[in-house]
Image 1 (cartoon, rainbow, N blue to C red):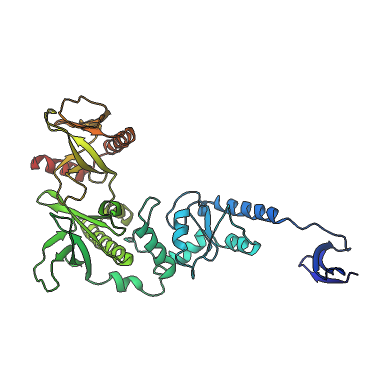
Image 2 (cartoon, rainbow, N blue to C red):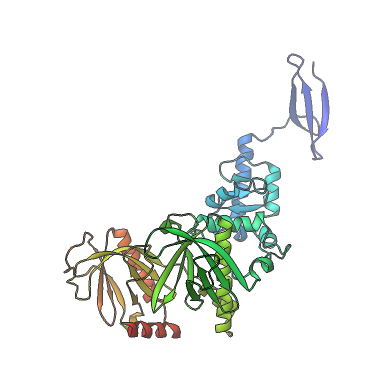
Length: 424
């Protein structure tokens, strides 16, 4: 025998009927219309497809079409507690914050109606208005290809520490001091040993000093902000938090390699360098807008890697060297190995109208060498022939050189070109 109890569903023309089977005494729920006729509920698969389509449509909206944290296109994950759409890499870092962020795949996971509605109500732009309300200009915003420590600390700063909500006066405490001190592990100049060194960053005179001992009064080096650059190099250093600091010393580029076991410490130090660099650039170029200065604060290399190089007569033996090409200062630097402290040489790269060009292939008359994919760089002074191991490397170098040559020169570029010629 069946007994019926009506339960409202929130719709005027439907009700849910609860029947109890007289044989097995198990409740059976059936959706009925207003006159008691049995209606069909959507299957779980239909609900899954419907909600996934809604979520995909949300990611096609301009403000949701990129990852909320690194800007990667076509995000296919989401944090339903924060209401943001994410790429797969950033979603993995959100999993490290289980009390703050819970993530689901847009394509693979089951989404309840309430969670879908929450994502519809929020989204990346709403979250950005809260979690990125007060981001200082010098703070580095990670890009899709950046290393994990930069992305991880950006995510933690936004959602865990809430540094950019304007609630705690965080930046006045962390970056407002005249001097900022950090103890880092630094690689020796002539060996692979890392030793603790004290670094002191000064906003007053725009310098970075480092000391070999805590009680040292005289710094081992005083580095000005004029040519200083900092970039994370975890693969090169063999440490997830590896940072490379470069500057000019006696007209040659000098590299310092450091790390800290704590990701927050090393990223905070990196951003402190950026804050000091921005203050220096603002003083040097008072008429330039902040948006014009930000790209100059720190710079990543356009391309780096091994190539074989011969000498000026092209009869010298080909030797394997580590090359770094920078778009900002238009310099190709080469080293004996990736972790060398000082460059062996530098080549300035101007524009085509000034006698610079790059081409595939070239005459190979030098002795030795194992690689055969040639790249020829022509400058007003001489021709350089480089050898790459793989065709893909060759094409990447050709593209990188072409990008530098195709960029118009600035007044500062002309000065750098003249300085490099005088050095030789």
